[in-house]
Amino acid sequence: MTILVTGATGNVGGQVIAQAPGAVRALSRTPGRFPAHVETVSADLSDPVTLIPALRGVEAVFLMWPLHTAAALPGVLEVIGAHARRVVYLGSGGVADLTMDEQLKLFARSGLEWTVIRPSTFAVNALWWSRQIRAGDVVRGIHGDLAMAMLHEADIAAVAVRALTDTACVGEVYDLTGPAALTQAEQVRVIGEVLGRPLRWEEVSRAAAREQLLTDDFPESFVDVLLDAYTAMSAWPAPAITATVAQVTGSSARDFQCWVADHAGEFAA
Image (cartoon, rainbow, N blue to C red):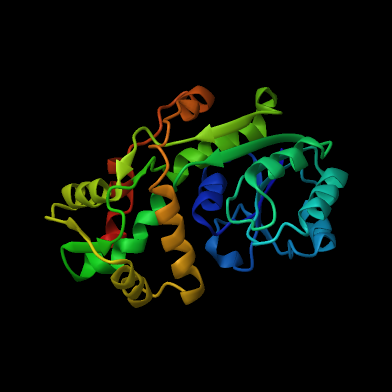
């Protein structure tokens, strides 16, 4: 089986490449980042026709949608369906004009063998605090009591690889979470425990949090979107924990301590 991996240089796509058996083809503009056995191809997902050369000889596609509009997604699925038989899609809440439920309906109508993965909060988002942690022992932000089911990217990839290679996963919708819901303040504490540092959360005003995000090099166009999302999420119930990672892969989801240990060097001064 030859698998085409989109988003190949991303956190999840990179893990899919590392875990996938058989031949792997990476959709990327930076071929030097991959092992010698990984073929690199390029295409523009906003222009579905450009995918055709990348799909020749491919049987399954890991599809991560990088665009904020879904305008080209139906065309991409049509092109994939003309060349491959299976697609595993990593659902995205960042597609402004297509909700997660609408994304699912689109794949169900595609005629492909499909699996949709819907992840909880990516643990890698904690790297947003890395600059503050490198600079001192305090992380400043809003809604420190906001709980998230932090999910290791390696677990997302493990589920994706199983779905790409196992017909039992066809037609399934997998809601993935980490093994526990941790507030932002608890996440900071865990990072400190793993790093051996007395890290703590400091609740600040929205204006101060906005200024901190800009200092941390967040794009101004994203800062208010993120802060608005945190405010909305703070009104929701704590996330329900699923056992889907274990059910699909046979291994329990990695905890946040494991994720921090795997990324400890990225928090180092």
